[in-house]
Image (cartoon, rainbow over all chains, first blue to last red; front, side, top):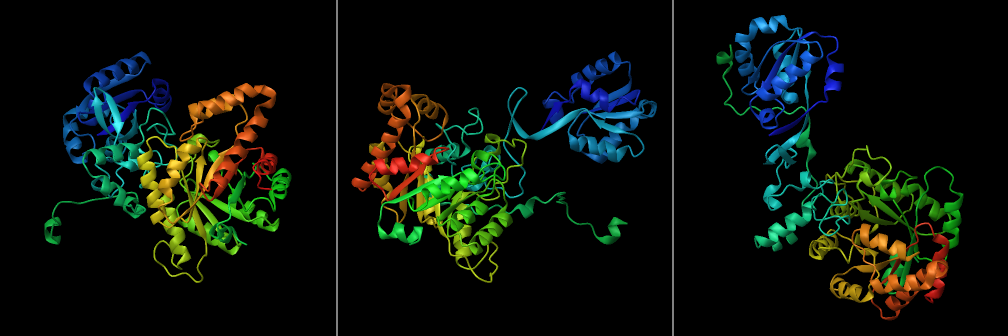
Length: 225
Length: 293
């Protein structure tokens, strides 16, 4: 999921100082699990805005805030509250905010969160980055642990000289990704594969932004019309 | 004779290093180069060591050549992508720099530009492969080049890494990628190093043992607590303590000389790489005490 973090109230208030009334859009997916876009978060922000003398005309938790058309449909019943607001606040990730930008052509849209990374929830509201969305997965060759993400250098052929007692030179809180890969492959009796595999430099042309993807069958020209 | 020829001749080789300064005043650096000229077989030039921004390694390598000292270009993958690395290798080649030491490089967080974007488009094993390719007339994408390089390429290894096995596996990958010589992280336990060399001797590569002078017991303790892959045995720390503050450095120099002498006399490895870290003027002293001058 996309891990998000609430912006400091001060920073948010500075961003929106020129606006008076707000409509709040949360998200029931990642941002709810992060506690940044669920109903509780909306209620808390509503209180905070009111305390600053602002109005909140309404708000709701979108099912999937990054889904443009779905969110647009969900917003229909809130027309009156939306019309009364002079600014939209989006309480999900950067994708959710930009979905709202697409929906509200004539209204300013501001994010209340910073989007951090694609992560796993390891415990309640504790998140670890596991995947960098690099475009070409190498987990099949690294014992299922991603060195592109788990190693601060993202290196591909074993631990660097900065590994101290299995910990990373960047921080003792980080276990060396390559020691983890080594230990796992050894445990799975794949040490020979670990020794024999030399990964080539990554093909970063798979990562040129902005990326698009269409997985549905292509429509014929006449159907499009 | 070139560094490569000296290594292959079987002579016990000595390399030291010069750290380019931050800023354009190179008087002191040139003094150190002159001091080591004719004494060491080659001089490593560090590449923004510890991720601290300084003069680039290539320019200082050329200055070494101008002063009659053969340089080893240290090249890390931290600051340049594959285009930059290859381009610099070609540049080094036309400047007559023959030796290159391929490393991944300390993370930018270790240095003085912590907000920099770390690159690591390649890492040490891949960079060795790139040097090999350039030596064979092709760039990394397989394009034919007009004129190839003729580098003697080396790499680094940490004989006392913990855990050791993944480090040794990487060492073997470096050998397979074309490394011809290795300079090791600092070693202080000769018996343990002998064990490493028994293993390393199975491969067709030359190994220079890393020597870092201990200035004090405090420095030894700091290394043990903070520097990855280096272990100073307690006996050496005691020896430094017993020497007292005034004699500690002198004792450190003696320890370095004693180790070098043993490595050479017992034919344990192919040479030593002395990292003086700001005490370049002490390198001749160590060499003299080791019976190398």
